[in-house]
Length: 186
Image 1 (cartoon, rainbow, N blue to C red):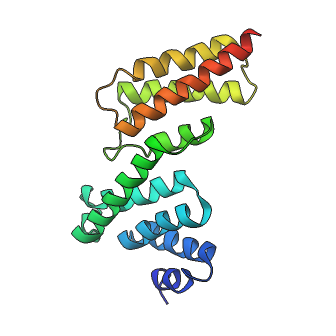
Image 2: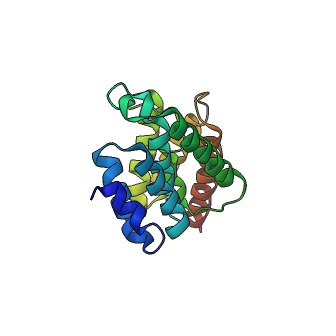
């Protein structure tokens, strides 16, 4: 039995197993419907917003890559795109996220894979995340490190290529970084 069939057979009774099979089929195939269903179940069963965004976006954009376009269908692309847009809108308007979730979702918050690897914006994001990980990991737990994070993110905010969700996430990440800066001042 294929991984996709196993995913569908478990979808009602054991969502954890269904996610496992859908994710495996989606990644190995790639299988567009399996990617979409893995994302849908990550949201429904686990409320795992990062993985939901990742898998649903992968299903929606599968046809954009010359190598994987043959595995995409217009109907599933449309369904996945609508689901991605609904989830993005939900994250923009309704969901409160902690800093870790905002950071993790950011890279999936654009259908255009923005920021593009190697771009100025990607370097700003990477620099900010490297310094944030130094701070959170206790390697460099000082105000200078947080200032480097906020400076990079503030420059990234000027990009015209950010998606609406990325704009909101970036603004909220900066608010959380500023809270950490204030705590450091005390």
